[in-house]
Amino acid sequence: MLALLGGSPAKTKPFPSWPIWDDQERRAVNEVLESNVWWRTPGTRTKAFEEAFAEFHGARFGIACTNGTHALEIVLAAIGIRPGDEVIVPDYTFVATASAVLFAGAMPVMVDVTADTYCLDPALVERAITERTKAIIAVHMGGHPADLEALAAVAEKHNLLLVEDCAHAHGSEFQGKRVGNVGVAGTFSFQQSKLMTAGEGGVIICNDADVERKIRSVHDCGRLPGEWFYSHFMYGSNYRLSEWQGAILHVQLGRLDEQTARRHQNARLLDELLADVEGITPQRLDPRCGRNGHYAYIFHVDSAAFAGISTERFIEAMQAEGIPNQAAYPPVHALDMFQNGSYKQRLCPDQAAEPHSFLKAEFPVTDRAAWQTYWIPQFALLGDEQDMHEIVAAIRKIQQHAGDLAEK
Ligand SMILES: Cc1ncc(COP(=O)(O)O)c(C=O)c1O
Image (cartoon, rainbow, N blue to C red; front, side, top):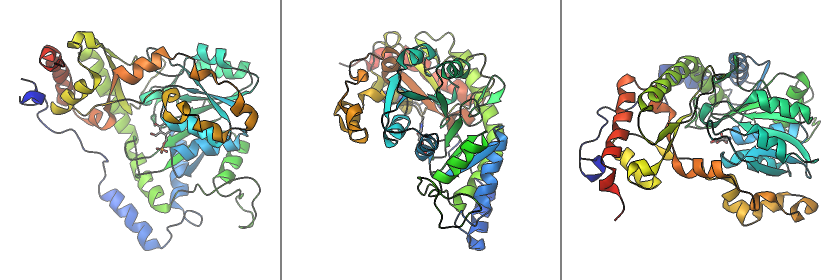
C-alpha cells in the first residue's frame, strides 16, 4: 500500500543530510574567529577561496560576493547594461535571472527553453533579438549546461554579451570545459541548497582582465585594488563576502570534485533505471556535457501514465515514500511582478510605456516544465546505489497504485 495511505515507505534508510561538513569547517571558522580578521578587505581567506574556485573552473579570475543574485547584478553593472537595454533570459529560471536585469534598469526579455534540456533555446533567442538587445543570460538548468556552442555563435553574430548563470552548475562541464568560461562571466550561488554552501554567498568567474577590474570595483563600492581606500572610481556597492564564508567555502570546494562525480554517476543510474518506466522522461544529457553538476535530477511525468493524478499529489506521494522532491519554478513571465506591472518601476519611461511581448507570448515548454516536472534535490544524488534503486521503486509503486490516489 502507498505510504501516503498508511503503507510502509519505499525508502528504507535516510539520504545523506545537507550541508555536509566536518571538523575542517569547524577549524576554518575557529581560525577566522581567533584571527580577529572577519572582514574581507584586510583578510586572506575569501581571497584564497575565490582564487581556488576560479582555478577549479579553469578561469583566470574569481570575485567572491554576497550571493548569486548580486553576482548577476554586479556583472550586468560591470558590462554596462543600462536603462533602455534589453537582456534575453530564459522563461524557466529562478526570478533572480530576470530581477537582476531590472535592477540594472533594463528589460528582461523572456524566451522559452528546449524541451529536452530545459535550457535557453538558441533559435528562439535569435528571434527575440532587437536593436536594444545587449546581452543574453544562459542558465544551466539543474546543472545541465545550456547549449553554449550555439548561444556563443548567436551572441557573436549579433555582437551581444553572453553571461552564464551557473547558480546550479558548480563543476558542470561542456565540451571539455567547466561552465562559466564561454560567456563574458559566470555567476554562482552558495545559498544553502546549492552544490556547495556557506548558507549564503556567491562568486563570479571571468577571463578578461578589464572585465575583472570592473567587476571587482562594482563589488567593492567602486574602489580599485591598490588605490586609496576612499577613492571610488565607478558606480558600485558593497557586495563583499565575509571571511567566515570564504573560509567555509574553501573547505567545501575541496569536496566538490568527488561530489560532482558521484551526483553525475548516480543520475546516470537513474536514467538507466527509469528508461522503461512509462510516462517518465528525464532531462536529456547532451553528449557535449561531460559532467552535469546536478543541482537536481529533473524528470517530466506524464500524469496519464499515473491515473491522471495532480502534480501536488505526486509530490506528496513521493515524500511519503521517503523521496524528497519538489515542483520547479513557475514561469518567469507568470510571476506577479510581471503580471501586475510592478516590474515597470525599474524601467525608463519610454521602455515602460512599450507593449511587452511576454504578456502575450506563449511559452509552451516552460509551462510544461514548470507544472509537470519534478526535481529530486542534489543531496539525494549523494546517496549510494541502493538509494537510487529505492527512488525508482517509489516511482514504480506510485504508478502501480496511482488509481488509489486519483482525486475523488
Ligand atoms: C538560476 C538561479 N540564478 C540565481 C540564483 C540566485 O542565487 P542566490 O539565492 O544566491 O541569490 C538562484 C538561486 O536559487 C538560481 O537558482
